[in-house]
Image (cartoon, rainbow, N blue to C red; front, top):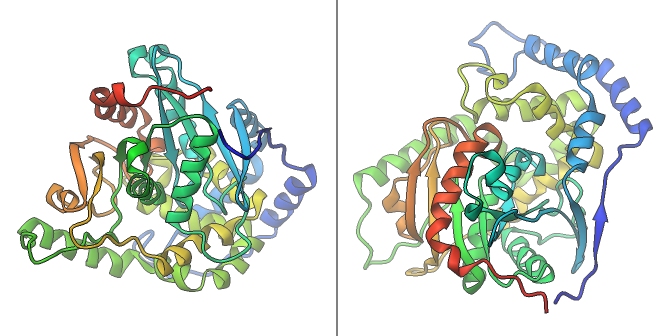
Length: 395
């Protein structure tokens, strides 16, 4: 049992905060731009003007706030961190506890479509034997979790927090799943607590992840060399955000904390670049979905604390020692518009890969863009592992 209290949680944005937001949006100052290929230098002014107009005149926060509050939410004080999480109990004979971890610029709202599919598959045309009990925490510094007051909160610290949270919820064994930072944190949890992990399912493997290579390892294959070349090209054109958020996040945060339009532009560019669309982010995510995520950052004042996770993890990188592997069973799924993904041989240098699949559609925000496809892949991966992770210790 845990030595910390768990409390119910609901959020209601103060009316004055919503009024202030409206005033700031109306006072947005727009930059100039030059004629160029659309989106070459970022979100076009005309697109952002339409986006802000929609936010001002059509978007209704209270509707999405009510949807978020329809999920069972809690907060737990673990060490010096106040951790917010959704805890949706599965509807099936033996649900596996599954920790879903979001990334940046996402939040727990990117999990809202997939949670019902995982917790109640029978209600969506599936088999109740595939049910999960979903725990979807907010990373420290994101959303309704507390903002770290000192340095040092990196993926390994969060992995240990997740293990403590699951102990507090009386789940001795559980699965972990994630993309973006969620993939790092899930992998770190499997590395540090392997005896507790039923399975590790990832829909992203970071471009910055490097398995430790020893003299006894096979040399890099042509596919692996090609992957590293693709990563280098991607970093050259798309990796500037990693550099600034990993080194000087506070500098950028003055603008993003003061201007909701600026915060939106910083996020919308990623929603467009990283999702499965032909030209506009709206083809993959609705404006309401994007704005709700942006609102969560705005109303909680977490633009800086969320970006700071990049600098913390840069100072404490995820490295494996030569010959070290992450031993729990691992499933990895590719989506066609994901950031550069490695070949299976690259992942097998560090992970115990037992499941490898490719989805026909989707990008970086898999749970948001293609919740049905991702949910089915998660079910397939965990089916042969179910006998190992369906118990709860209520003693």
